[in-house]
Image (cartoon, rainbow, N blue to C red):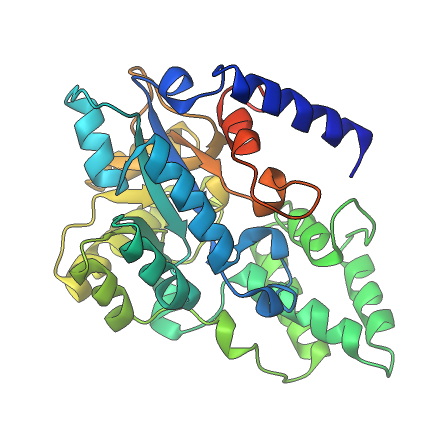
Length: 343
């Protein structure tokens, strides 16, 4: 553990002991929203290209134990409406959200949520679910892993493809994360071409079963449990890249299809990658949604734009001590507004 992290951990503990980062103090009269992605056992996390997007079942349980102790937890739709109505609660309002509608959410998160008596919101990318096709970043990530495993020049082929696309293979993150970050700067056609080229070069090895998305029937099970289902667009595109016609399709058609397939209202939108601007927010509003969430760090006050709500992205390693244990003081510190570099 670095000296800087040790120092921040110590500061976090001191603030926590003094009550200065207590959610009831820092989050009072504000709406907080927590974000999760994948929930996988450790052995599967180590086989996934982006382990930072994963919490294990035990880590999710630790997060939810903390949240139920310090917050009034629920779906985004419920908590947002309560907040807008000015409802006074003994603990700050917190919404629990899961992006991408991965099958592991059903398998692992669902029973943990039930054990804590929490209802959450799940955001579904409609086209990928219809086709049962991994999202583009997962396709890219698994292709990279497959190439790196090959002993007949796979790494050389990978580096050549990346160089042709103008992507540097160096960076502070793991290679798959570095390539995804760089790919987001490419035009849509170039990005999808890169994904297909990497998949072709990596061969026909299928993605592991644990990586699949939920089906509509499985999403309906979550809805029947009382969880909220929201839209994550049609194609998980970067919304500001879309022209007006494509933008309207991404937000309106995804809502229509989800309502048609599930028979429930779809009132919440989640911007893929968190990318949004005034034009995308307007399109979401015009499509009939009541709210939308970004990936901007922070909570939401009375003046928050209902179509640009901020969230807290939950990353397990950011709230762990030197032995990998969950440290409540670190989570409180990161959500308090005091943590350096975070809002």
